[in-house]
Image (cartoon, rainbow, N blue to C red; front, side, top):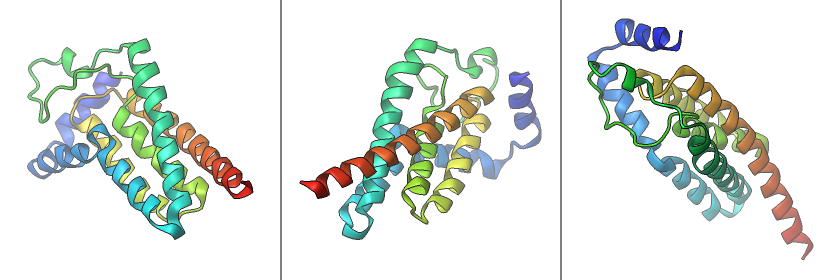
Length: 174
């Protein structure tokens, strides 16, 4: 069933504009660079430091859960392996498929910002949604990988914001 979803996207949505846009959007989140940069910029601002710390904690929790624990544990094969005739628009990733790390990192920051009370969560959500879709469009993740990434990111984001809140509270007490 998941192959049918991916094949439908390829058959009905594939076009020149998206063939250019989706690899670009996806590349913004390779290794979490965009989200790490956002967290760093927020950490540099005194007024927005709590948001930056929330995002940084969320990304750290996501990295551990997604890349260190779940991907090696599950070891799911990527969908393009089942369609060797399909031309890939991006270099094939070398790690396991579940969960989508791009999606998890994006949604971790979204939920960290939302939980921390930042209005930046809404534009972050828009980019996270396009990033998640790009992983399907590029045929590098199964739909359940993307859903798993969203859920993992949401949990890491919420936990990261709560951890940041506790750390900030503790630092004010000392």
